[in-house]
Image (cartoon, rainbow, N blue to C red; front, side):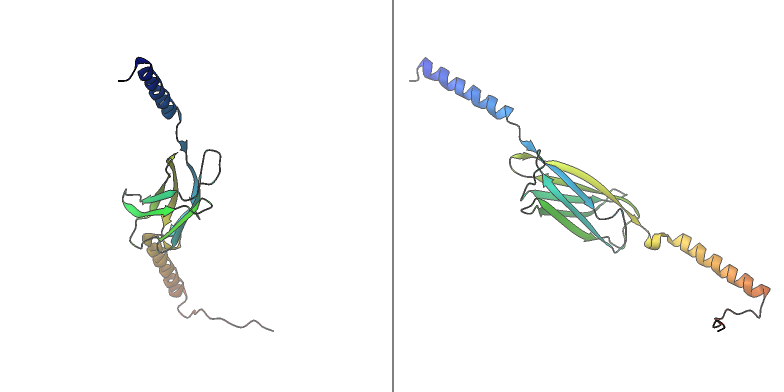
Amino acid sequence: MMSLRSAFILLALLALTTALVTSCKAEPLSLTAGVEKPTYERGEVVVVRGYVLDSKGSTVPYATVSLEVIGPTGGQMHIAMLLSGPDGSFSDEFTVPEEVAEGAYTVYIVASKTGYEDGTLTTTYTVIPEFGFDKPFMTALIVAMALIAFSIKRRNPSSTISHRPADS
């Protein structure tokens, strides 16, 4: 049988262990990351680069890094799971699909590693129309140019556009 003294010591050790475990919080991870440029056209490659850091700013190697890209309509466009390198760095790249909506896209990044609290970061980029103009604008521009050309031709039917060499 256990003596009263042994039971008291065991209870004290249990209380001390519980106090130590609850007072030792896991160190939080942090992230520095971003996309290479703020805007992309359909078909371009988006590159996300970053580092996993501890609370002192030192890099954390071999952490699990999850990326999720959500589009302007709330749909998921890309997802990836990576491992940070020996220097704490990570990178991912993906092509903007031709059929995605124009607008702001949010990249959600989470870093995890045993013994640490997860670190999170969000960054954004925008998908813009090809050449920076949308189809209705380009159609209107082409129609306007055709009307101007027609108007010039109508005023002077014999006019032609030609290139003449400069006089020497």
